[in-house]
Amino acid sequence: MENINGVMMQFFHWYLAPDGSLWNEFKEQIPRLKEAGFTAVWLPPAYKGASGGMDVGYSVYDMYDLGEFDQKGSIRTKYGTREQLLSAVTDAREAGLQIYWDVVLNHRMGGDEEEEFLATPYSDENRHEQVGDQRTIKSYTHFTFPGRNKKYSEMEWHWWHFTASDYDGYNPDKHEVLLFEGKSFDEAVDLEKGSFDYLMGCDVDVNHEEVRKDIIHWGEWFVDTVGMEGVRFDAVKHVEAGFFPDWLNHVRNYAQKKIFAVGEYWSYEIEALHHFISVTNGDVALFDAPLHRNFSEASKAGNTFDMSQIFENTLVKNEPALAVTIVANHDTQPLQALESVVEEWFKPHAYSLILLRREGYPCVFYADYYGAIYEDVGRDGNSYYIEIQCHRKTIDDLIRIRNSHSYGDQYDYFDHANTIGWTRLGTEEHPGGLAVVLSNGDAGTKRMETALKNHEFYDALGNIEDTIQTDDKGWAEFRCNAGSVSVWLPR
Image 1 (cartoon, rainbow, N blue to C red):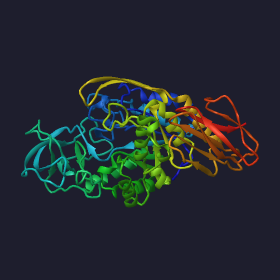
Image 2 (image 1 turned 90 degrees about the vertical axis):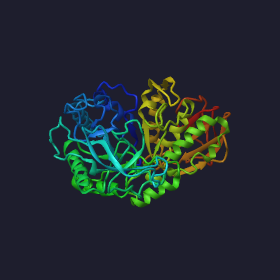
Image 3 (image 1 turned 180 degrees about the horizontal axis):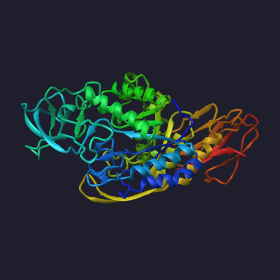
């Protein structure tokens, strides 16, 4: 995988204020991100959503509207105007930061006009189970994009460009999955619910010739308009897997460069991730959802979690070259759809485990780096005030250590339920290496081998003031405090 030595940042979270300020904030932060050691930034969907300037971007309305047209109640998107976006991107490229764009190809929402056509209801829990007779429905499937007035693309979307919806204007209060006449659910998708082709809104039919042509045209237009070093494919478990490498290879050929790609296949079933990788010929990396789950469970279980198993059934253990490792993201943060919290005390552990090891391509989450405060209603109907701590200093320290010392052979010492560690031996270009020890219980020690004999090491995170001396074979008892992490570097 490209950029295996790099570090990516997800530069947004779900609850950013909808004030159009993110592109300007990103522009302002570019020098600091570059200085901190980030090599790439994953930005949110850049185009207009169904809720206009309030929309996070995943309720896709018009992919050609980057905050340029008066549509859905605003000209700007949640993150700013087209001009602000292009200005920030120009600065990022000049600074040497790569930009990865969030690309949502699965669904569209906020259609401009209703259309009548035939559809058949299917069970939301089993998409192979028909639960009613075919009937005439009325749904918002006609996308005319009146504010754009055919600029950049003349295509209007109609019901036949989609496979299914969950809205019938004749039964507006009834939620059901409605398969359109002449359509079928894709089978080359996740097998949850029989076929997890349908997710939300108007489900895009990626096998329709006009749809494929327009999405390919959009890719070319986006390369010409904004540029593209990488993409993050949203909800890949819900789209026919073969479409992604087809689209990606076309855009790569058009751009005449290798565009990095990572998919959001949010499943804790490691075999499902392996299957997607196989079907796409390893062309699209995946976020390591099972590793995130291990982090979440470990943070909640405290010293009852077996830390020697932290990498079990994860993508980074089984397919390290195709694993993008994360601690959290916008979907897992508190009160979101896939809420799966990593408790604050464990985040230094988790970031050490993704930033200081040889395997995986680490991604840092905006809310963990800058902190976040917000309020929302939970699934239980109650209101909650959420505060996510700022771990910027720790993450900056870990990235600095990654870039200066995390090189060479890696020796693992995952032989205890509460205290684990590893060493990196360094290279000729980056000599010295490091030793990492972490504990989810009492203070612990780990006897580990380094490349340096009779050498003094210090805790670069400052959690332990004393130094440690290796013996004449390069071994030492490295230690950490209770529930803490220590990263030992040579003096």
